[in-house]
Length: 201
Image (cartoon, rainbow, N blue to C red; front, side):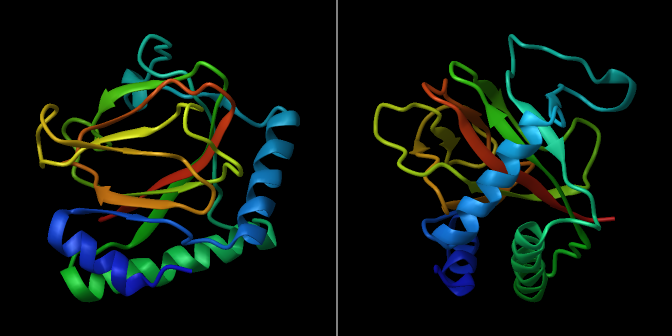
């Protein structure tokens, strides 16, 4: 398990962090099984672009399907992960005085061929989403399977240097939601994750 301290240090230095092995394989596999079961039960919906009355389905921009996480009444496996996120939220507040007060998130499934074009995670005209947190749930992901997270590493820029992060099981990625452009490259097999945001009031 990767220490929270290492993740915090990377966030402090760069504004983003990648932590392989942040979630154990047993817990990650259970979360993946929960995700797949919910999908088979028809609980996922096509992801939209925008929010509120401006929300639309744009398959030319994103092609994933999502199921939002309820604040309460979750499985033991999901509660374990949410408890880990709560520890991370408190530590981020302690180090950076961000005033983060809650996590919102969803399971995400990218079917074979699906992608999500370059974007920021903070909606235009809003300031509530502060830090993006992604946990990947893909065992045996191999080079050539696609689905990498392309993260531009200069704040505010959608060009120049970038990282390609493979969505390997148990890997966590964090970054400042309103500053780092990113996209999901086309997946060559089904790709699953939990994606969410620490929010301010």
